Image (cartoon, rainbow, N blue to C red):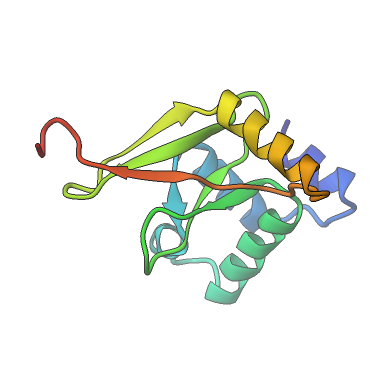
Length: 131
């Protein structure tokens, strides 16, 4: 779906800044706020933070916990849900399918009367190059 349609469906204003940021994150697997700040020096810092928070609120992006001191995000792709593995030495990140894990999380939550809003799994490992 195009960002214009997404924003329209949420009764939100369509701005060039939102379109530029959305186009940028569509080309990245994982990104940080710093990536946006570095790439969009012509957009006010506050506008970037507001857009990032807006995209989180309307479920265009999700937070992924890959590094301790850097918040990272990725585009939500309903057709391709996945989780991440990160090498503890070289910091390489790969994705893996997580359908069975997700089913188990939902089953356990249901047993305990919880409703899962979102989840984020990052497996820390050592890749074959770093072994």
